[in-house]
Length: 101
Image 1 (spheres, one colour):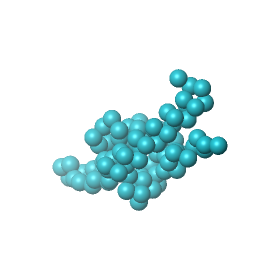
Image 2: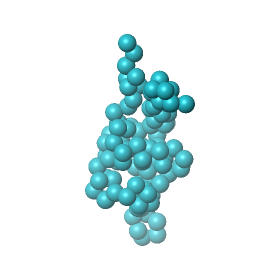
Image 3: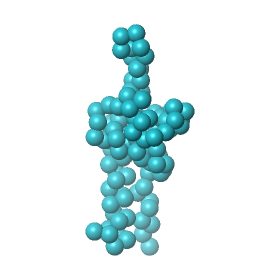
């Protein structure tokens, strides 16, 4: 029997990581505060999930100064895009096999 969840990626099984990757799929980059507001999470919660995705090579953290203020933003890596697209394809396969259209 085929295991329908084999193609799902453990990096994206958390709602914050799923939301972050989804937002980065449609944006070239997102600033820390924008992403925090979009996902409705705390600084620490976002930071811990970013750290995990960065360690896996799925997102890059860009730190720079805008004027005299520090600014942190996030960019999806090519590998992150490849893995997330594969995850989405596995979700679609699961839905089709489960009777979804």
